[in-house]
Amino acid sequence: MTTVSRILQKAQAFELATRPVSPKEEQALAKRWHDLPASAKSPGQLLGKRSTGCEATHGVFPKCNFSCKPCYHSADANKVRVDGPHTIAEVTRQMSYMNSQRGFGQFAQLIGGEVSLLDPEDHAACLSIMRRLGRMPMSFTHGDFDYDYLRSVAVDRRGRRRFSHLSFAAHFDSTMVGRSGAKKPKSEAELVDMRGEFCAMFDRLRSEFGITSYLAHNMTVTPENLDQVASVVEQSRAQGWRLFSFQPAAYIGDPTRWKGRFRDLTSDTVWSEVESGAGSVLPNGRLPYEGLRFGDLRCNRVTWGVYLKDRYVPVVDDTSADDMAAAEEMIRTFPGSMVLQSRMQGSVRIFRSVAANPAVLPHAARWANRFVRRSGGVTQNWLKARPATFVMHQFIDAKRSKEAWAHIKAGTRATEPDIVEAQERLEACSYSMAHPDSDELVPACVQHGVLDPEENKSLVTLLPLRPKSATAKPDSQIPG
Ligand code: SF4
Image: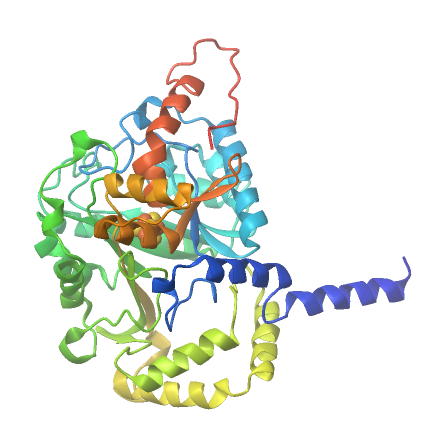
């Protein structure tokens, strides 16, 4: 190949990489939008426009060393041993499928039982594989591990960092049983310092190795800890978390772990407790969630914003027609995901997107003016602004998922109102798992509520806690 053709080839690759959206991603987004039910095709919808949805692994390491109530894992999960080669092979298989279906640059959770039960080398290998396959990985943990474990994942044996950035989602709440130093916490307040210590490990990682992090705090909400949600947010919001996610408990997983009357909780009661602790500058401390949507509002409520000291300023006020118009224009102008792109690639892409739709500029300027005004004015200390996102993710009870999934598989429509709702929500699902063998993307509600029990039964045979023979080799394939 001549020098000229090499230069031409590089220029073509750069041109492709800096388009507002790549042809493959454009195709995946169009399919996602086409497949959404009419109930989800609303203004501000990000699915099918900016994202094809979040992803997650399944059956890769089902075991956990906690015994939380509730737990979304099936009763057999803890009878499956953690096996590095199986985990790595399955993560590769599932994420390759995601890449083929959804293109490059989506967020994916490395989730199963407890991720820190993986050998650090295997954990790091999974993160590298996910990144190579165009997934921005987030390790999902109960957070009960020490700095040495984190460092061994982040840095190799010769002290060289493996990653410049890590994402972890940590589950901390009083429904959990087994944490060192708080085996059976009686209140959320007992966990405040542990939440802070978890964030401090990542501060240390940054100061010692320059590795940045994105930390998400997850909390299961039950009727017992509902009245402590506000204080969790208030006491933890300056600890270093970038995202607070709340999951009202659902009847999924091991029935022996169900405790309490979960249906006493409504989305509104939980969200209003989150609002009470967030400190939003909007009237009544409102956290607006209709301006930008991620799938079905009955599944997800999301508010993006920033903290300026202890005042939370939402990015989009859904009662402002101008904010809503600006959000739509932004979504139209910047299609697709910028995840895993270099700064240079992202900057050129933004420039080209604006050049293709300069009408976004007056919208952006007026939005910036409104945003600064609601934050209290230009004199704020903007250098200390901390981005923060609030999420509520309401899983569907297993019984309803099962019926709705049967309709989806059969190509029929449900008629009972609660199953109609479940079917619409599954069709607009923003959190899917890969099943390459059956060529399917499966909503996490269906995975945990319908498929996990059988899948884990097979894994018990494949990966028993004590291998029958020392020479037995794990077969990476799981039913899917
Ligand atoms: S996993 Fe379930 S609750 Fe979550 S977005 Fe999908 S359908 Fe909705």
